[in-house]
Image (cartoon, rainbow, N blue to C red; front, side, top):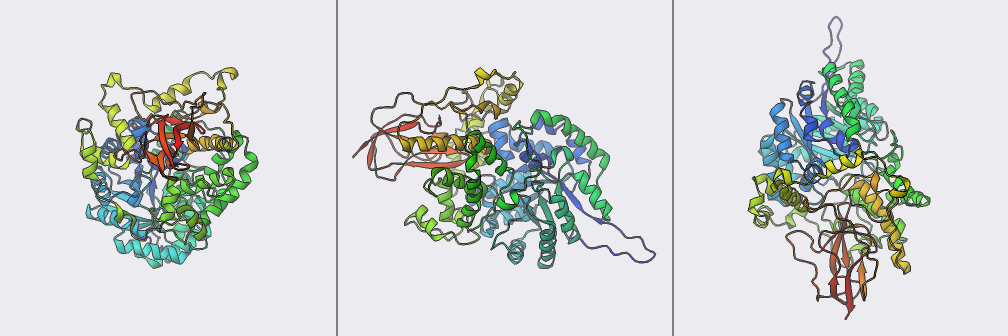
Length: 633
């Protein structure tokens, strides 16, 4: 990608229009933003030849959430998806790589990252767009250098936001650090759609002066400003922008390529696109859209709230609808005010995966629990400890003390604390489930999800249960239930006030968690049929339903504070936190409840003996549900 140079007209000579290169996001970010990542390989193959002829600079078709969803929801091999697209495309293929997080929600060891990049490049990726949620270049260093080592294009990425510490000067310094690491180009990633045209012009101008490599802009239409921001950036020196076809654009997706082509052409630029081919592509996805777009009701085409709260992907509107369903809409203003407070407490992180989940859920917990930071997921603790990287600004000292106690934050590159992962993963996997080396890498990144897919894949085709995607499609095809049938029996209310408070928290959070991450429906949830069918932890069995215990077990119990999935270990290769008969000290971890990909350690309320676990590992649980019987010591 060449750095853009301006075109000057001279008397008697025709000016040569500047070529602006277009990256198409239809096969990755567009359907991730609008269809909850539901595009199947069978949806892609009939149209991929047309897409290849459209004249795009590159096709973003892999990475982000697509890898996880392929395994968990679609029951497809993401590596095979990439190879099939590459076999049909001459257009360079591009992926979104979360730096040291790869495609997951935590840092992974260097050996896993390196082998992932090597396999991705050999399977067809030409351009790696590498970002870190905190803009910590220590989390980008190994990824960028490995991409260069395999001969691919390394695009260093600025996760854009604004705050007292996110200045143009800071962004230029970040770009210079990425250029020094070997980046071939710089992308301004405006994941929340908050980049104004004036800010786009100012930042792009500064970057074109500060670095010698090309600039690209990636934006979202959430606030409605992206088209104007794109034009401002192009006029200031950006040489490439991201778009999607019209039927896959708008709302939380990218600007429509048809509109950008018209805007840029009128401004004297050339795109090199074949508009007739793009029209055919758009018609294809327009017809497919009703089958794939989740039915979550009316969605605001423009969400101006994002300009204040910086939450990407429509999370603010999700908060509003879920609070309304739970009869807690009167607390919406509190939640919206709490979001920027939590972000400030945490040192103003850009809100992109995984920091958007961490900050958003912590804000909800702070409001509904009645006491700020009285409930803190493990991911918030890890963030404050520095295990995600360096916060853009210092974390509030009092908040850090409340969360960490006497623990000290780490100051080194977080991945330096991790042991190599490939050999250990290979030894844990049943060899009969492994078909290729890429399976070991998939398992390293998503152990539970990958293992579930491998077991499903190992079954004879006629014995495989329907994929969650097929279950969802069948459920959508069923006639709507009558009003009487649609109401599920309510779960019994806990007797004491504290338990009732946690139950109220759980009801609201369970709705939010499913909207954002996918947790099974529970008894008493009248809106369960409106949402997608979640993936099963064990693919051979139907989706687990949380069993709300009607009879409270004898003795004191440790209860689930929210809806989610119960685990007795921190990971498949880790020992149980506790066994029956174990004596636990106050505050010791007993188990984990996972919700929205955030893991909440459930701790012993006091020194006690674990008498009996009441839930099996991997089962769905409801808020307030007893998890274990304990006896004081």
